[in-house]
Image (cartoon, rainbow, N blue to C red):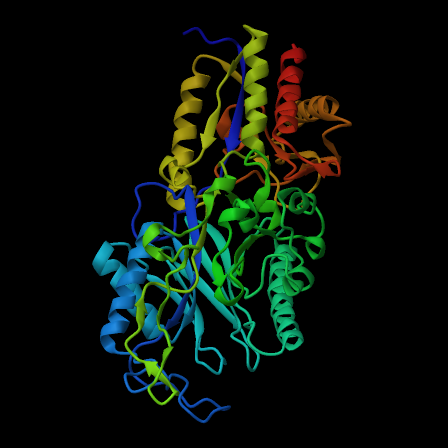
Length: 547
């Protein structure tokens, strides 16, 4: 191949980072993440071993033994674990939020049963003892590492359990809820649930204020329909996608989390059946931060909501009971019959060995494409060069990424990868310089979120007046090409180049520049991939027009 006398090297800068030690080992990065929530209904072992309740003076689990009216035995406990494990394996969630579990030991027993019976593993568990008088807790089981656990609790409440889960270099915050039941005074219960909803919302807002693109999933048994007063006033969600999306670019305090149960057809939404009123309820829900609804092509969170049909109330035939298909519970049913003396006699042999009085709900999140502003800009540059058919330039584009790490979705900068990058650059630059005269080494990079909302150019200190003159000519050319639509007011700045790029002397080119692209917003408005492509096209056309 004959090399033309001039060429440009547009370099797509992508940082490097070794991926986290996820469990179980996977051949490639996780591109899907299934999150499920399930009230497993009174999952107690058969041993009375909990502290005494401050209200009753009895052990919190006093009812859960063979001698109590519940007739709860070790055999029944083991049967229930087996039934729950079967259903969980059919869902195959990566993260499972459970309510109404007695202790961490019971949660571990459930995880062990799932693994022994079905080889589906949950190596990581988040659990805290609640202050609930019944001694029931919430817990989170995960196939990915749980890096941080917070528990926010007040007396008489089950508390808000928050786990930060690391999924191939990304952080997914899961908020586990189990709000006050419907038993008792209605207004008192609504007030309690509203306070719990406000606690959950405060946590969501706090995380979005810190990072607008945070991946936040708030789920659990809310003990209230999706349009109930506590949810509406406390959590302040959106039950339709359009409303949630409208708040995606608003300040965090105005964010409207979206309840994915809204994606489920109304006839299939019910997760709890109120037998007395013959009524289905949407007590169990999964709310997500509104920016997780953005199109995968738009800059935003690392994980996005999947298709509407990927949120499911899970109720295969074995888990349904009766003509109305209600959840098949696991409990002793107190039934009575008339005795010979006119009194009622309790029939103690009626036991239903199903699953739970709730159906689980799950959703599948999808990893956003790894494409970044720099990738879209490079697309635009290469498109413009390909259309020009110019013999003056040869274009060499090199992704600065460790292929194995990029395949896993990793980003960052580990020393070994940077060393390989420098060696690769040096070899290729030497090969190209032997047949052509380099004019410019141009790095494309994205500024950090919250940086300038227009493109800027970073230039290292020039080695001599001629190099400084060359760099300034390129800067002026790019400023003219990008102003006023895409260039920041302070367009040019001096400073060190991104790690891994060679200095001008080693590159063999008079000028080495880094074009820093705005992240997420351009000139005060939300950015779109087409705008980054337009930036690349304008830069390419400016280069072609220079000679």
